[in-house]
Length: 216
Image (cartoon, one colour):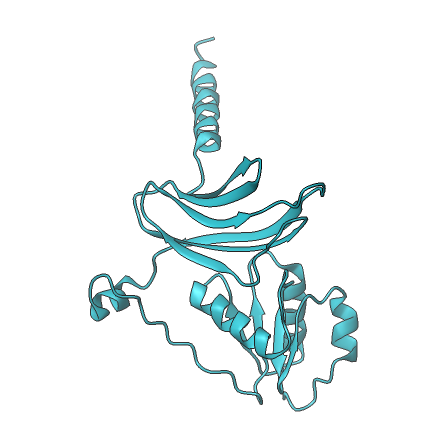
């Protein structure tokens, strides 16, 4: 029994650690508060640092849905209303969402601009002659596209929308110029020669049919 004691203690410590981790709330979480006539979606900051929350909602059965992303700063240990959805009477409402967050970034840049001023993020303008792709983490279609481009030695520019909320705004601003109105945007997003493609369901078929000439 004495020989087994260190093993038992180790197992108990691992269990306690795993339990504590499971009980730890996310840094920023989306809180849904349903009322009879409205659904309020809040971003709740559980950290001691300023955070930025990004929310894009596409709903059915509501009087309004988000036509563009909502991006708000959330002070430490506080909750901020992101959007209010008004259910239509007699209709079963549903919605899908993209919700991400990040700590207030680029502190050195912010300090240069002065306390309390919005940080400056320099994103090089799009070049119609340059292939630009917008990607995100844990995106199999994004990986498939990137692997194809790399294997064929095509030149391209890659922007990760989770790098900074300004990158997401940059992407949506250009999507609107290409005919995007509202709704969910499936990744990756491809922009080349004034053409814009998003929500590509069959990436192998898209790769096969797309005109990649001029990229090498």
